[in-house]
Image (cartoon, rainbow, N blue to C red; front, side):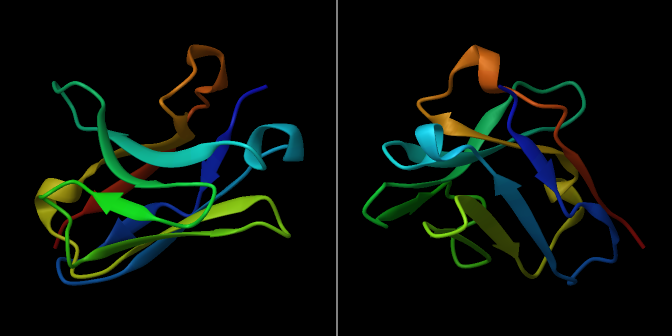
Length: 114
């Protein structure tokens, strides 16, 4: 099973995007979930995480700008990204936390540029 992220696109600096990722209930229900990103030439990094109970944590680079949430009825995790910066440009992925190799999908491209 690959977890597919969606909702990326091209946005100007200061803009917003909302990413979504639906997962099978067998994966979603019992797992903490995370949003990750990989910028060109850099390693993939954890951007935000949310426990099955709803507690959240964020990378310092996105604190105050990004919000992770989950809808347990829809088995979906979201990443609301506000005040986007060019350095947020990356491919964004969702996975469980900690990540499982087989769950990596293709990700969704987020490009922040004027």
